Amino acid sequence: MSTMKKFEEIDYVRSVLMAIVILVHIVNFGTLYPMFKQSMFTFFMPAFLIITGYLVNIEKSVGGFLKYFLRLVLPYVIMVTSFSVLSVFLPVRDGLTSLSLEAVCERVFVRSIGPYWFFYDMIVCGTAYYVVFRLFPSLSKVSRLSLFAFSLYLLAFFLPLLTPADATLFFMGAVLRQNEVSFVKAFPASVFSLLPFLVLIFQPELWHKWICLVLPFFAVSFLLWCHGKTPERFRVVMCYFGRNTLPVYIFHPIFTMMSKFYLPLFSFDRSGIVHAVVTIVVCFVGSIMIAKTLDKSGLSRVFGVVKLLR
Image (cartoon, rainbow, N blue to C red; front, side, top):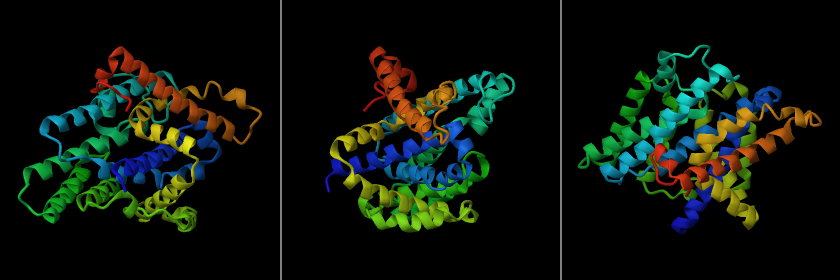
């Protein structure tokens, strides 16, 4: 299978996972379907962490990795700071009650806010991955992976935002990459993957246990089957959004917050589904438009990149 095809399938999966990220951050939808929202957390972020661990390129030069590092750190600091300030004035879950430098710094370095904890995990895990493999090039692959795993669990012990489970998921992706396992072989496409997925996801007592290590496999396997069945025109659009999950992830909270203001327009739909679907589309399109504007104006450099869009 070609590299282009491999990344097309990863992009497709990421676009679906990104849509779920947006969905669970729509307050109205979460209020109407709290159990459904909680069930989504058992697989979509674990899958994202595995994919991220798989995609991190530790063969970069030090300069190349620093660019990757800044591409994550700058958006994280900018958006967490902005979101923290906004949370004083807007109804944001776990927002600040009063504005102070100490409170904002706590959000940036200790607790984060909104969905941006994922950037924190990417920064910490990715840096540990790169440093271990660069410092010990003469060690065997197993030895370096063992040191990497140890460093992750050590970091998880000291850093509140990085949990051992998240570290394990990132590590799983890195192991697949280091053993040169292609993405489609790691997650063989199958419609029947939906069956164990549905059985497990309706077991709430398992949600905070080992299930997060199993569900991503079935979810991604099923999504890869869907990839092969999706009409080409729609698949191309989805892959474009998946290829640009970075700007969508950065900017989508702007639009999920805005969705509260046009919620009354959807009073005809008590299910909240129409409002949720419209908001997901608005988040994708709006985030891409912001990124395009920043690219054209040259302001993308504030986020550590020449171009946000790929």
